[in-house]
Amino acid sequence: MGEITWADFEKIELRIGTIIEVFDFPEARKPAFKLKVDFGDFGIKMSSAQITKHYKKEELKGRQIAGVLNFPKKQIGKFMSEFLVTGFADENGDIVLTTIDRKVPNGSKLI
Image (cartoon, rainbow, N blue to C red; front, side, top):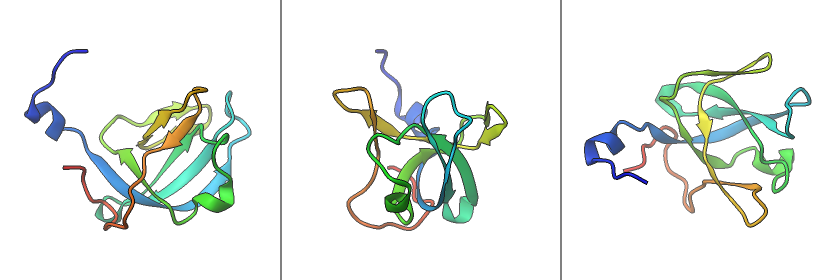
């Protein structure tokens, strides 16, 4: 893995948002949910996330998650993903969401 500079890191818009709605995504090739997330001044954005192994729809609403906002939008079937949901793979390769342990304002940037 190559090193990056501080200036490279500062280009990443890794921000916190609150999940306001969760939808099933039956058209996805791998099991996933569609997430509607409030990023404060950056608006409400949609993305999909392959997080069905560890999370139920009901427990996701209201949770703050970290997302990358400055990647290009990505077409996933008929759905347009507007940001990258971040997470880490567990020992089985299933995704665990990147979250925080205290609430911060939506749109806050990782510093």
